[in-house]
Length: 356
Ligand code: NAI
Ligand code: MG
Image (cartoon, rainbow, N blue to C red):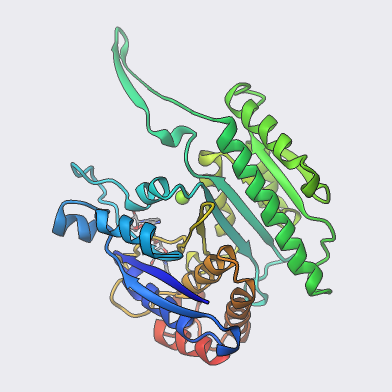
């Protein structure tokens, strides 16, 4: 099988880590019978400054017509509002209907501070307050600003469904490697605030419950957690969680919080997933403070490459990458400065390629 992958480095260290991610794909063992072809695509603030648009039509068209998946580096956002600029990754999620943002967070031996953490947040990606329908009204007592929080049955149903599917596949991986985890049953935690927002979050909660009550999910233990107590428990007892499903805003916050549990942002991957497409994207930004120094941590990108492959149906190839990355981290000889080491991006890449 040959997969065609769009490469969108974007800005800053995106241009350092995405080429390293490509090398990992090119170096997968030939026994997997998996080949790749690549197409370089533009997006980001640099592209905006050159062309007046952060997401050229050509990028979207090529992804839609030619590609099976993509890797996205990072984009810089100007700190003050620039007329005409808006985030290309947000637009891309919309245009390709990538409705789920999936972020696994896992402790490795080297970074462990207690019980191992192995959880994934599954964040709804298309609605909630992020529909950006805001307005400001000039009232007698000054301005009043409001925003629409939109929750639909359709979006809530499909995000809970994919969370259920992820929970089952995680359990299948655990079952295939006995002794690696004490968890015997998959669990999905539905996060909401329906005690206050009974209609919007109420609909999310009720619909997610309905989706997860399907026969195919009968092995899953389904729980709920009000979002504020979720934050508390996530920080007190992160090892308790398996799959967390949440509407857009809570998911955004929870997934960044969960990333903090394992140390460097340079380790945490994500995938933007739709029914027919997946984009792997490291969680970090363009890191202007280290841009060009050759020391950006490529691990988040390598794991994003693996995550993309999982959603493209190539779990075996993904597993090879996870194993190589874990080997690099556990060994600890080649770590970038964000991990307390002295290695360059290239040295980490070389070490991971050797392990592959
Ligand atoms: P950032 O993630 O770029 O950097 C935060 C800190 O973590 C910095 O000290 C950076 O050096 C370090 N860091 C991040 N990734 C690293 C890696 N792979 N290896 C080693 N160290 C790493 O977040 P920040 O500084 O808040 O934002 C910088 C720019 O990135 C802004 O323009 C922001 O808008 C954008 N950004 C873009 C995101 C995206 O493309 N999805 C996400 C977050 C921020
Ligand atoms: Mg975020």
